[in-house]
Amino acid sequence: YKNGSLKNKKILNELEKTGVVYESKKLYENQLIPFITAYVQERKLTIDIKAAQMLADFIGNDLVRLTGELDKLQLSMGTDSRHISPEWVESCVGVSKDFNNFELVNALAARDIYKANQIVNYFENNPKNNPFVVTVSVLFAFFANLMICYYAADKSERGLMQELGLRVSFQARNYLLAMRNYNAYKCIDIIALLRKYDARSKGIGNTSNVGEGALLRELVYKILH
Image (tube, rainbow, N blue to C red; front, side):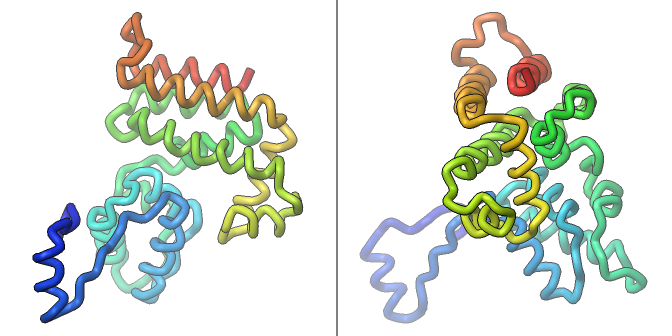
């Protein structure tokens, strides 16, 4: 039953008599990269973790669209290459390999003001490919996980991987870097900021009608300072 779920028990009971009723729930954000990796591996391909993150951030959990883009990437590669790189995703899908939510998270984790502002400028000039709501969602997920890291019993790279269910070590290293640059109190403030600016982008408390580009610029400034 596409794009919905059957709630009628009578219909469900009748279907179960002659077949199998399977409910396919949407994946959570932290399940997207494992899904992408498994999907390409089934097709005898490999994918760079950054390329997978670019696709996850750009497309989200619309699996029909996501698998469609992966299929197009495979077809466009021909038979010479079996590896999906960030450059290939940039070329075929249209998302920048240098200016995307993945790189924005990295810049904020490192407290790299110059790089973060470069990305904000790019997002402001390319709003269609970089919707504010997606960026806020990605940042919220990162800082919510960062909050968990502060209270993890084992704060080593391996310990954080286990605590957060991470698949690759560089993700844990990013959290370790962020823990050095932000304390738990600042992280709480950032999470509150993300909620506030998400509401403002939806018209709540945005009395001056500031656009999404300006909202992002304000938000990133307050995160970094």
